[in-house]
Length: 283
Ligand code: SAM
Image (cartoon, rainbow, N blue to C red):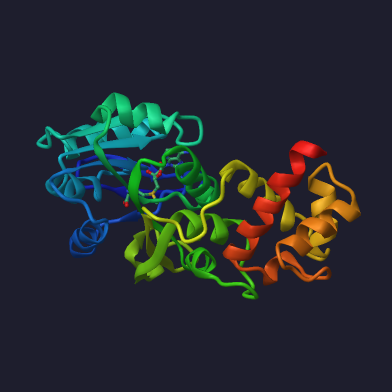
């Protein structure tokens, strides 16, 4: 726990357990808000406003901002920081326990142009990204500060070390790019790792759409569940099918019987998903 005298008076105790590594550099914060693609037409859901440092440049660009913060002790500071921003509101809650779709709809109304922006708490990066992708399809973009090596993972390709369910999920739903690398020294207190600001833009037309996206997510998780095993063994373990049925689905998808999930492109996984979907009702 680090103690810091913040500009609103008093002492704030940074909670390492909540990933409280804040950004104070105004130039960097303006740059991050620009990279978040937010315009006057957009409503922004921010996760973890901290002292409101990123909330302010977001609010200057957006129609409206709602920031979800778990730590109640930040609220007196946030109230002062944001008092001049009529279009910025802070809601207390845990992002992992909050219905984000309901929050966005209650805050901004139905059919708003929604974007997500955040300097994420790193201890829940994967869970938050998964939740945003799966439960907030209306978000046009997700701009997030994450650990640099998780950023590498998001961009990884078949055969790369980090290639797995998170990369596939992100790349299936979104166009993913690294907008900026941010060294650890830019945060207070500095974390042990460098960071990247990643921008995920929701695809309007997916190159490999499948009929049943929930089945694709189940397949992706199952296919990578035991990395040392071949795909066929993972399929048998995660779906109610025997070896012959799994082999038939793989063959129909044009896959080698001995292949491993880590070698498969998203297109190949989508083909396999369609074949399993055809098979499953019969099993
Ligand atoms: N946005 C600020 C900045 O850039 O300086 C703070 C970013 S800090 C990396 C992460 C923020 O997320 C903290 O304010 C922390 O309290 C908050 N947070 C941590 N866990 C959370 C959770 N489960 N739900 C909502 N907010 C959370």
